Length: 184
Length: 184
DNA sequence: ATGCGCATGTAAGAGGTTACATGATTTT
DNA sequence: AAAATCATGTAACCTCTTACATGCGCAT
Image (cartoon, rainbow over all chains, first blue to last red; front, side, top):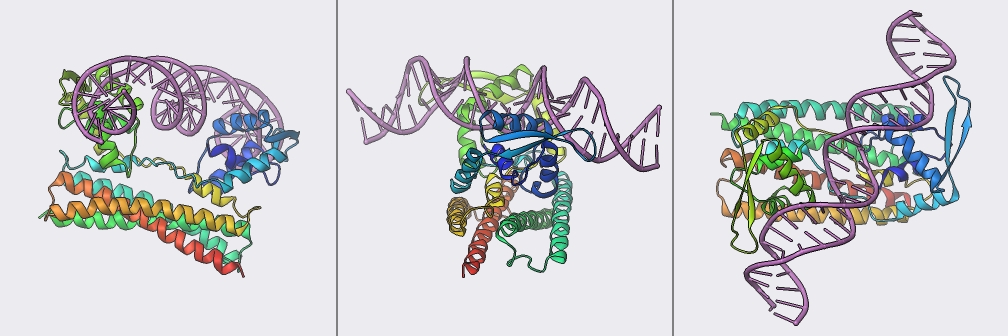
């Protein structure tokens, strides 16, 4: 049940569903992702439950927006979520499933190609995160440890995102070498 | 669409839904997880689609089992999956969402308690995986690089599982130190 | 006039969780 | 006699994805 809480978290200023989608794509995509078709009904549900309220407003470009804000009850629900257990639901990694059965009847060259693909994937993700970090660092001398609390904790999610990608990359490189060493 | 393929992967010998659940809990839980209530219908669907076949058999303990095996078509579907793109669907990390909004109105001590909880969680996971590895290593002198192909690739999923937990743990420890350094 | 970015949605379906239901055998 | 393990399932519900639907305003 993280999505509704994340939406509440984004309502420090009044935001539209469209704004929220931008925020997901720009700042949260290393740990969460949602489609507009999931966001819009979720916002309506928050209003039904009294956790958010909505009012229409003209947009600079395009049609009217619906701007959502947290109610007091919404702020309490957000705060309770932040103080509750870390949400460490078990994660599913399909690519590890593929690898798990790779030795059964497949050629080592299939596995090598598989790891090359994976490496390219993780490498691209790491580079994207590094670009975000470089840009931040260049424009803010307080980066990272002197940042105000809000960006300080956000930076921590960037930190782990970056480190995860590096861990995956190292593993790909190591695994390719191990497979190649067996080819002879 | 990984679950049906994983089920097919497990059918090197005829297996029951119950056997599959054991396998998930013992050998695959670092990267995949499924409830019996999801496995049973999924197996029936594989039979309907001609990817698996089923026959009843007496069990040593308890009631009769239904043993599932791959058909030729099932083997082809499995092989196609292994040769296809690595399944790197975007992953959702609720705990990073909590952290992302932690700086908004919460006390640093909430964040410290949060990271302590997280650290305990990842630490326990790492220790469980290390026990699996230690046991394997002690009983098989060919571990890890001289293993036959099948266990060799399985070991690679254990390798990344272990490294991921370590990455998470290091991050928790580093983050706790960074938060504490700001308390003064 | 065509396409892109802005803006909001609905519907159908796949994937996954939680709760419930049944019953045999083995262990304490 | 009770509890744990073995064994199979259904139903309701929640979450998320994919496809479809609509329309404005601006740039090429």
